[in-house]
Length: 103
Image 1 (cartoon, rainbow, N blue to C red):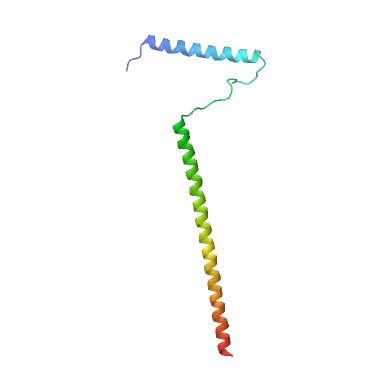
Image 2 (image 1 turned 90 degrees about the vertical axis):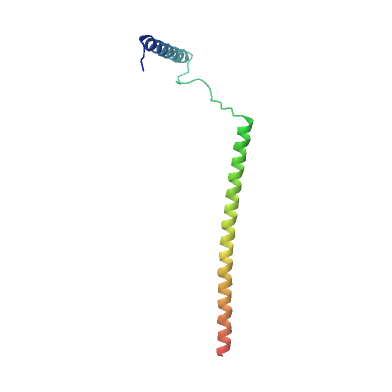
């Protein structure tokens, strides 16, 4: 690829202009008493309605999945606790029955 002198000069000229503009803007800001380097204000992000709906739906789906997974893990815990209680009760009943038989 061949890069002509004209292109190089054009790029350098453009870069120089942008650099000068940014320096002048900073100097104006400092003169006005604003010491911050960027005083362009808060950034704004605009998204389309469709993208916003999709984002909200994804967030809702994520929250729903978290709730379902939490509920299913709680049910498993409750079931395991219930199984262990039933097992203890069954062993206790067997123990009582055996002790009554031996007497």
